Image (cartoon, rainbow, N blue to C red; front, side, top):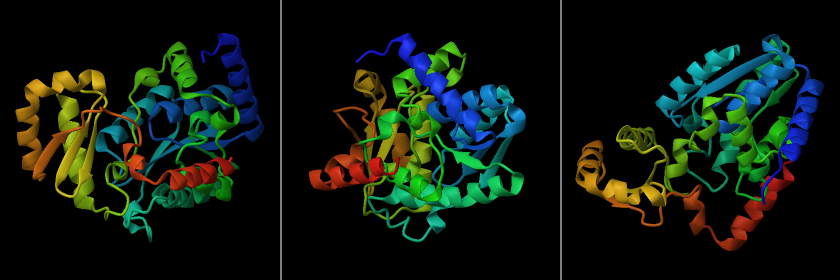
Length: 287
């Protein structure tokens, strides 16, 4: 259903009210569409003296994304820190359970909350949005348990609205493809290792350098399953041999192209329907 400008304006005013009520915030800043919009709104409403953006740099965070986050924060005039983290050191994370994101977000908040407290910021906020409700989002539960706020979600703002308003505000992230941590490319139950994450990062980076903006390389043991948007499938076929050779060099024995094309969270498709429903309910109960 389309959303009118008036509805978006009302939601944005609500977002500003929420931020104004917080006074000072630490923003978990990945440099993606949602966290960039949240950071921009916080800076506009609270001023740079009351906002601190923090980016967590770990094995699961693509190097290209970190560099983009640094440049973006600087362009917005945001105080910004990059802190080292390691999801692979979190007990239970590397085993890759279906609630893996819970461990990740909980660890992130373990880092951000003490920094916020030490620097006098009463709130930590992150970029969860209204679309996340009803999906498999264990990170929402971790945020609820730790008292971390999601102003975009609280204001009921959708991804399509964030993109529209980001464009109006001149944010270059308005049409940036969605991205998720590199661990999301590995099927649940398969061990996550630094080597696998590095292979995935290098493979995706190579394909992006060929001109594809939205790419996932899902790793199934020694097989790479490439996802690009359905509209881009035909463009990849003429260079299939080049891609195959590079991914073999990276370490994959087999390289395949998913004919259904890119879709967010495709590894959740193999979860039993009942488990997907339970996980969605758990996520929704967090906010």
